[in-house]
Structure formats: structure tokens, C-alpha cells
Image (tube, rainbow, N blue to C red; front, side):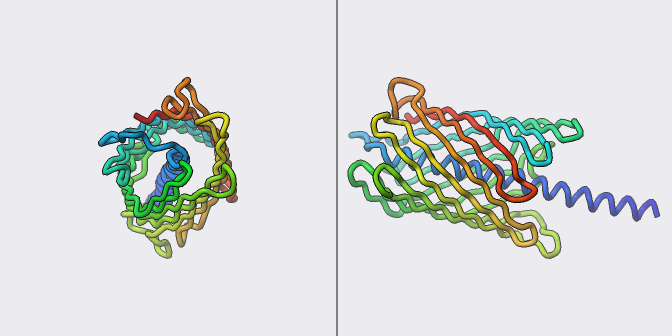
Length: 274
């Protein structure tokens, strides 16, 4: 009888850990989509320099706080390191949630470094008109699990496509569709493959270069696990007098829209392109 209870306890623990790992990976993926979308919108409105460097670098560091529906509190230090090359057609990036601290509803805490995601993007089509770009990009990526107390236990590969285009007036629109595949052995009735859709509408303030607001919506789904949706509002502004060519600050608020994951997150990031 004790052995049966022990096996049942292990099974419950494994299922619980699988759910946590999936949530960690999904959170990283969603945050990366939001960061990418804001960066692409910013790039689409910036005039290309007369002599683009062989490699253009983008660096972003930040801090994020999440108050989960189940009263879990999470602190993250998200980061992005991106290199764009080949006449701004290709890019490589490293992203992650950085050092993470989780406080459970019962007061227990966990600390450590979260997963790291590697990504490659290629621009298949680009048209610039009136200093605003229309782009079609394809991307590949892989999430490296950090294990530990706050990381996931399995990797995840993904493939996606992004279309960015000017809308009406100072508005730009963006749509990203992606597929992901977990390396973890799925539970019965659960698929390895997840699907997600992401949309963004961004408005640029013409009288304040480097300042804009963005409204974002994301939806992810995996058979056997279900789906989740998030909505985000973000404001970007120049921190230094150089406007778009200096440090850019970004303040965003994200709200979970799905029952069981109606979390509230606030994030501040500093970005620099050089």
C-alpha cells in the first residue's frame, strides 16, 4: 500500500512539474514575441543609416513582476542580445527571463536562472516607402532548459513567420504565427506540438521620435493542455536626448485573459541599438 501511494505521489509530482515547465517555457516564448514585435515596429519607422554597419547590435535589459491568479509572485530580469547582419536581412539573438525569484502562495520561495532561448530570423521580403517598412520574416528558435528550481526540464524547438506593414496614418500592424515542439515525452492525450498567434498594433508619435504605444494580443494552444490568451499595452520613450539612436525605455502591462491564468505583469526594459 505504501508503495502504491509513493508511486501515485511521484506521478502527481511529475505532472505538476510538467505543468510548471510548460508555463515557464510559454512565458518566455510570449515575452520574446512581445519584445520582438516592439523592436520590429521601432526598426520599421527608422530611416536606414547611410552606411549600415556590418553587424548591428541590439541590447535590452529589464525587470518584470508578475502577480499570478493563484497568488504566486514572480520577479524576472529579462534580457535580449541581438545581432543583425547581411545588410539587415538576417539576425541572431539570445533571450531569456534571466535571474528569477518565485514566491508560492504558501510562502515557499525558489530562485535561479530561467531558460535561455536562441533564435535566427531571415527577411524574405522588404519594401521601404516614406521611411516605413513592409516586411515578411521567417524564424527558427530553440529554448534551452535551465532545469533547477525555476527552469523547465525539456527543450522546445519552434518555427514562425511574421508580417509587418504600415496601417492607417501613424499606425503599424504586425502578425506572427508559430509552431513549437517540446522534446519532453508527452502525457497520454497530450500533443508535443503547440500553436500560437500574435498580433500587434503600434502608434508612433511623430512629434516625439522614439515614442510610441503598442497594443498586443497573443493566443497559444496545445492539445491536451488547452489554450491561454494575453493582452498587453506598452509605451516606449527615449531615455536619452538622442531619441531613436539612444537608450529607449519601455513600460508594459500584461493581463492574462484565460481562467486559471489571469495573471497581471508589469515590465520595464531599457534598449540600445548600435
